[in-house]
Amino acid sequence: MGVYDAQTLTLPNSYIHGGLSDRAVAILGRLSKKQIMQLVDKWLDDSSTRPPLTLEDSDEESGQENRRSEEEDERRVVEWVRRELPQARRFTRPELIQALRFDYWSNGFNLLQVAQIESKCMWRLNGSI
Image 1 (tube, rainbow, N blue to C red):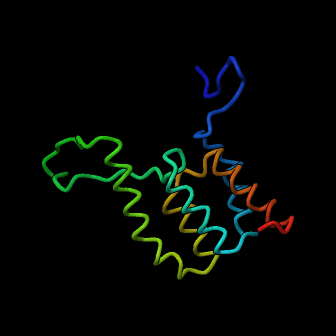
Image 2: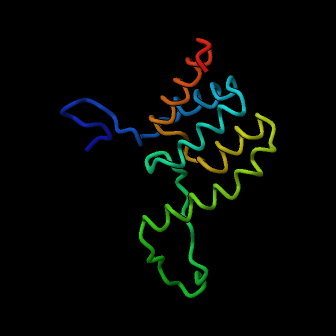
């Protein structure tokens, strides 16, 4: 079974394509820091674009599995990233992009994020934002 939907020949928004993700990082460099932070705020509000981080239980030494629900994990990840964002706002634009790519979205950006980055850049180039 492939990643795409064979009936509609489409890829899901959550699919991460390495080449497109790398291209999106380059496009982020064309955006202002404010525009990048707007994207991050948007991504945190959407479950399909949140960082794919997993939080581990404090009782990891005992070998018990993490039994929290995915929803609880997502909520905690978003809270953690939102706590870290004020520090990220002090970064230079290249530092911010590097932190987003390697610390928060280390697997790469998914297709929805790539489309949002490209769209934001197109709007900027057209002078609409």
